[in-house]
Structures are given as C-alpha cells and as structure tokens.
Length: 77
Image 1 (cartoon, helix red, strand yellow):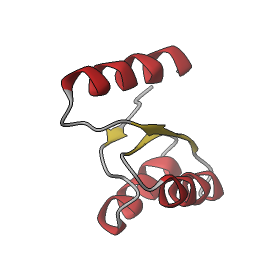
Image 2 (cartoon, helix red, strand yellow; image 1 turned 90 degrees about the vertical axis):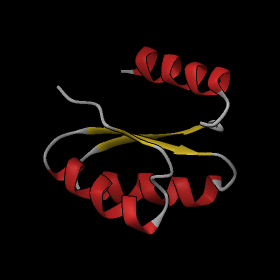
Image 3 (tube, rainbow, N blue to C red; image 1 turned 135 degrees about the horizontal axis):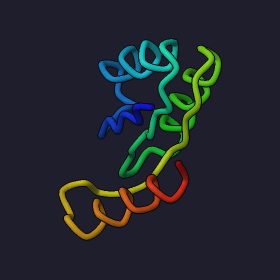
Image 4 (cartoon, rainbow, N blue to C red; image 1 turned 180 degrees about the vertical axis):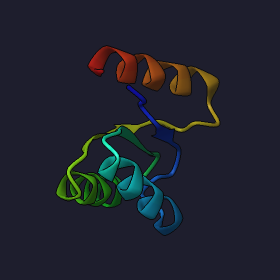
C-alpha cells in the first residue's frame, strides 16, 4: 500500500494529484503550514473521491517539524 505525502497539497496543483491518487486507493497525508481550512477542504475532496486522508500541520522547511509530522503519519497509518 502506498501512502503519498504531498507537501502543500491544499494548493490547486496538488489537489488534482491528491484526488487522482485517492481514486486509485491511496491514503493521502495532506500537509499545511498555515491554512488549516484549505487543508481540510482538500481532505474532504479526497474522501469524496473514495480515498482516505488526514491533514497534518508542519512547516516542512523546519527539519524537526517535518520529522515529527512524518512520525505522526507513520503512527496513523
């Protein structure tokens, strides 16, 4: 099973990719740094497409925050 992680996946460019991956059965980790509402909208779109998704807040330019988020994703899935 693949678990794609797309930093910034609440952006328009990654929304389409996330939904396509969800349609193929992927579980998608949606990362955001500031816009929780946009991230949750992306999660809802993924779920509507039949996929599983969860939003994670982390600034991926911060190595510690990124590592912590990746640990949370691994624990969840």
